[in-house]
Length: 580
Image (cartoon, rainbow, N blue to C red):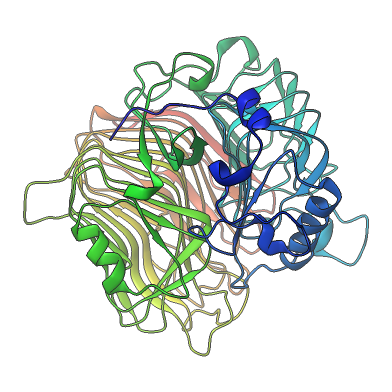
C-alpha cells in the first residue's frame, strides 16, 4: 500500500472535473448517467460543486422518493460528493442510502443540509416515529447548520463536522438506538427520546437528553453531561485504544481509493482533528464488485489474489462463502451492499489477520445456514486484529418466496476482534416473519479471547441472543429485545457469559422484554460467572409490555423484577455476587 497523497479541496474545484475526476462524465447533463463513474457503476452517484445544482437536487429528491419508505426493498444507493461547497443542497437520507464526502477531511466537503426525519411511517404529517429508520449512513461531510438525524438501529454517522446542533430525534417522537462516532459538533447534541445511544470519540459543547441507556465511549470530557446512574442514564467509558476507524471511499491526486485509518494510540475525541494516519489502497488495486455481474467465483478469485473488495450498492446472491485468506484485506460495502447465501452456505469466512469487514448487510437465505459470518478458525491458530464496522445481519422481514433461516448470524473464533456498531436482527415485522418462519437460535457467539464490542445490538433470536465464551471480553453499550413471539415456555437470558470465563468487562447494557404473543417469564436478563474478574457497570432491564410475569432478575439472581409496562430495574455495579 502506498501513502495517500490527498488533493486539497481548493485544487479540486479549480482544476475542474474533466478526465482527472470522472472518466465518463459528459459535457451535457441530460440524464443521470452523467453522474456515474464507469468502474463504480450506476448505483453510485458522484457529484461536484461545478454541477448544475438544480439537477443534482432533483436526482437526490428522486432517489429519496424511491427510498423513503422502501424498508425491505432491493434498491441500494451511494451518493458521493467531491470536495467543495454545496451551499443550497438539501440531502434527505432514506433506506439503503449512503451519503459520503470524498475529501481528506469532513471540512473538505460542505453541504447545507443532510438529514433523516421520521414523517414517512404514517400518513399523519405530524408523525415523528423513527423506530423503523434503519439501514442508512452518512460519513465524512461538514453540514453547515443544525442537523436532524432521527434514526434507530443499523445506522451510522461517522467523521462528521456539524456546524450547529445535532438532533437525534424528530420532534421527540420515538427513536431506538443509533451510533455517532469520530465527529465534531460545534453546538449541542440532543438525544431527545432516544431509548439508547452510543457516542464514541466525539466532541461537542454539551449533551442533552436521556432515556434508558446513553453511553459515551472516549468522548471529549468538556462536553460530557454531568451525572451518571442512578440519577441519570449516562455511562461514561474510556475510549478503546487500538481500535481502527472504519475505512471509506476517497478521492485524491491518484484518483479513487479506499482510505484505511490505522489503529489509534489515543482514545479521546475525534481522530481526524488531530494528526490521523492512514494507508491508501488505489481503486485500481481493488476488485470492484457489481451485484448484477459478479458471482461467488469471481469475487473469490479476486480474494485469492489478495485484493480488497469494494461492493457497489446492490444485493449479491452467493452460492458459496467468500473466502478471505490474505492478511489486511478490506471488504467495504457502499450503499448498504447486501450479501445473501443461496445454498445454506455462509456469506463470508475469514481466517486472516488484520481483515476489515465494513458497511455490509448480511441476509439469511431460504436454505438454512449454520452461520452468515465466521471470523477465525477454531482448529488452527486464531486470526487477530479484525475490525467489523457497521456490519448488520437480518433474518426475515424482506419480501421472499419462502422462510429464511440460520443457526447463528455471527461466530467469532478469532482473538483481538473489534466490533464497532453491529445490529444483529431476527425480524419482528415484515414478510416471512413468525416463530416457525424466520428461525434463528443465536445472534452472536464469541469464542475468541480479547474481543471488544462497541455498540452491539442483538434482537429477537430464539435462544440466547449473545453467547460469550471467550476470555477477557469487553462490551461497551449493548441493546437487546428478546423475542416478541415466543409461544410458550420462558425467555432465555439475552447474554450468557460462559462459566469458563474468568475476565469480562461490560458497561452500559440494556435488555428489554415485550410479551406480545404470550405471558412469558424471564428468570435473568443476563447470566455471568461469579468470578472476581467479571465486572459489570450499569445494567438496565425494561418491561415493554404489560403481560406478566416479566423479568425476575437483572443479572443472575441480582436486581429487582420488572413486571408492569414501563417498569425498569437497574444494577449499578456487579462482581462476584456483590451488587448495588
